[in-house]
Image: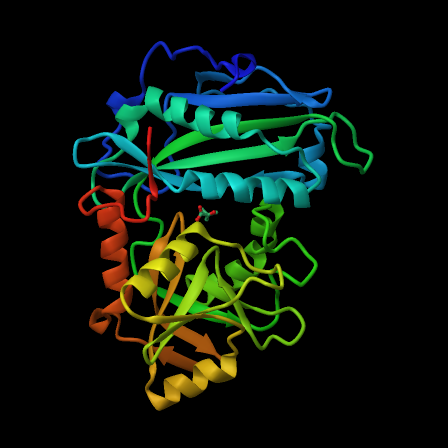
Length: 354
Ligand code: COI
């Protein structure tokens, strides 16, 4: 880090940690003692500050609230066997963050601010990293426009922040999924590949409709034909058909280039499976189910890690899966957990020490 960006640290007077049981926490509800805050003003990033976690004072006219120039990332840190925190593939998230920024006409965040800010923040709040299996410190970097102006144009001022949330699992049970053939998440030429806040808001109506009928999430289909699978809720999705793992390909820019997705592809190949990244149609899925070759279906994401799907409801049919009999997804999940917790060698160099 250059001297210009030495981070100013103001410590919290008291830690909130003593009021919390890290062994039993939901996802994303509690936040650590500190946060990182940096402003972009007059074309440059100003002094990064780590300060006590606190509310922000924002103008009602602030541009992000009106036109949605807002992006974020999700990253996780785990304790290794010696109790030292390590972050899972943060550079990949850093690069994706700036791809989202570019698509939303926002400034790039310098690597030093993102990476060193995250590292120092976690160092300061290292007592907050849970050690229990399936638990982690969820890291949420985000940026939003802060111009006080309600004309529609890219903002000139932005705020980049990182907050930390000690978290338990996102989904604790295998999911029931509604195949969504009416509402869409992303179209070619749109912002589907970006981690733009509005993508998540825009998904809520369809998800709520599915929930009313007892489903956990929706399986998004392509926008023009409703024929090809895109993502599952906030996750990438994998189908194991025979000995081949198939996941939708990224070339149309409608699917998030998931870090967990990439890691799962690598681990599936390590395990000897063939992985195909390509368009996957509902017809092919239904035919494989009818032939008995559709073995496993699961979502992948930072928050959710690897989440089995026990039911897919589509076109008046219910496809049921015997999740307890699966071998691939549980094996990959176990392996990923072992790498993250330092129980097996990190052969791919995924873990960054704090
Ligand atoms: C993640 O997997 O980190 C996500 O972005 C999903 C969600 C919590 C928004």
